[in-house]
Image (cartoon, rainbow, N blue to C red; front, side, top):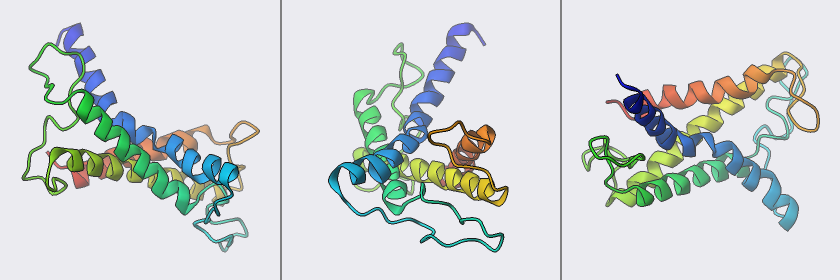
Length: 177
């Protein structure tokens, strides 16, 4: 493989998974920033309950607002990516590809048209990202570690790896081939 082919492969991965990775940004937007500035109530996923070890199940940083808002944000970003690079494939000379270039109307997420399919693809991968992020929070709580925030995280790998692994895991299940 030549350097140009490797670059195209890397860009393809970033375009496909980029909106999902940005789900955390959407989760902060919908789970913290918008509620803080508008007074919208934040609904905490764990309801404030502790696990049997005495620590919170997930913590205040994991809300339904953020989970669904972050997945929605990813759906919108995937839809935008699809429309910006519509019909670009690896066969062309364009540096960016349409995130739907390997899909078609027979795929389970293809409902009515490619725009809805792009949104569902982004929403699903964004949701997977945030489920992985929540799993990381759950594991950090079991160890009694602080959440990320004003101070640096005590578990940087648990802040990054679970959501990345979750995206790839769910993509193999939801989007085989």
